[in-house]
Image (cartoon, rainbow, N blue to C red; front, top):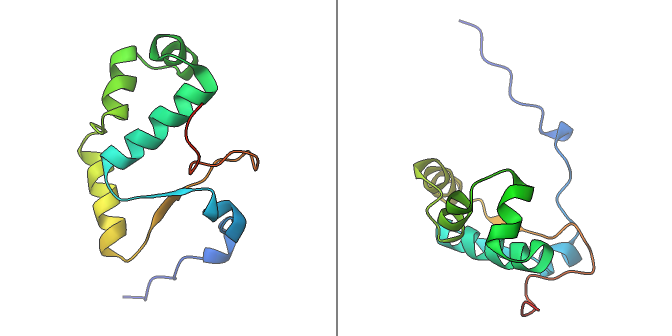
Length: 104
């Protein structure tokens, strides 16, 4: 049986610049992802009732996601990444925004 070809990792986007990572937040649990989502949603889209339709989800789904109830898939994915020694860092695309600042 032929050996599988290793994945070509050079095709992946490069990691964000160090300054971008300094503006980000390292997350390990679904609850931490939810906190970042809640802060970003509040900053960008306001209340859940206004944001949910714009995001294409129900208010209940958005609320559950922000509370860390992302489901077993998110929990499993984060656990696998952590077990592989990988960090998940959420970084705003806008270079003027930092997750380390207090929300407005």
